[in-house]
Figure (cartoon, rainbow, N blue to C red):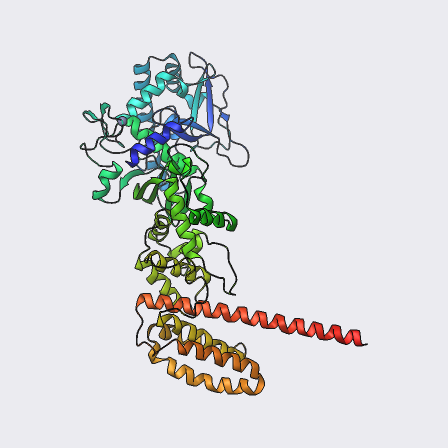
Length: 580
Ligand SMILES: [Zn+2]
């Protein structure tokens, strides 16, 4: 179960901090004596001159999107001193002052409860100080930040570090309204102990784009998945505060860890292993190294017994944010060995020559996802990276929906880019186990699909046009890619007739070129019995690959021919020089 695995992971983390505490910015410290007198009238500013943020520290935290909710002994000047922020709009100042008074009253109420419950002299000292007109005693600097959190030290010791204060906060947070008042004692779904159950999960997950920065609560995407994630908003799946705190901290730690998280298009993809092992998944997705991928593929082909690392349990979860909630999109529970196998399939299936017919490095996940939309920074839906990630890890087939998006981009751009060609090939091969390893990596003249040869034909006709006319504004591909790839019979007759004058011209000007082009044309036409009337989505995918492969082949041939001419010329010049 997801939550139990996260709780287990949290046990591996150092410095998780106390229950109900989280890392937060602390801007100021006020130092007091044991009797609540100021040691220094100016608060200590913990910020450096540049960022003005203070220090990161473990401090009491709850989620507060709206509504008054004090943080114990670590809150801003509105809560701590009742000092309102200056509103730019003077009309709003009155309501700001009112709200600040309520916030301060709540803070003092909480502090009073804490002093009574803990009987701590240090908490009492802070209470004494705050009850005796603290703003008259303090000298706040001109650049004082009302929003900065204020911590207290009494006799040099941070009050929030006291064990009694921590225990008080843990109990208080349990009864906090963000998690619901503590429910009946029930058996916790995760740890199995009888504990007061939370009615709702605490909303302290931070750092997923698209969500509120003050923190979000974890929920499940659909009711059916509740059971497998261990998430349910009711007392039938009770979770205790300790477990909730632990898995929340595990998620936040994973989000902040560059090697265990991958963020793309609003999706946060987190992964970890049961035991710590050397396996950096992130590199495979972000910037896959050609040599590493080669080694992975060789190991995969060679087979052999799994290494001990391969048997390590591997977990991955994809999350997306929606206002105050974090939605669990996917939960994968597998092994490192299976992930490696999935990745090997992933990279093998996406292998394709570059636009010039040469071997090309593997593509990262972003390049593949971005190939499906016009503007990846705006148009990429969260489902795209999620689907790709899942397929990369599990080797599962990719859906036709993704193929449809890629084909649509080909039509819109009248071009088949390498990332798109790689993605199309990846999708096709993921759907059919009968493909061989080297299928469709490069031009395949014996390909069984008529759609493939129609794509090749368009590339050949484009080449003839270019050879005859040079670079022109609008090529036949610009004009006819869409029709040719969906309804070949309606357009290829006309395109072939249109190529005849170009070929005749070339026969006069460059007979060698004309001959070669004519032969390519005949080869392709020889592979086609007739032009298909229409092509299905999948056949359009073959069309795209045929076009891409033939164009890459043509360019490679052109480059090789130019090199041969250059070499011949150099040899001729050398011979002439020798004669002289
Ligand atoms: Zn528990």
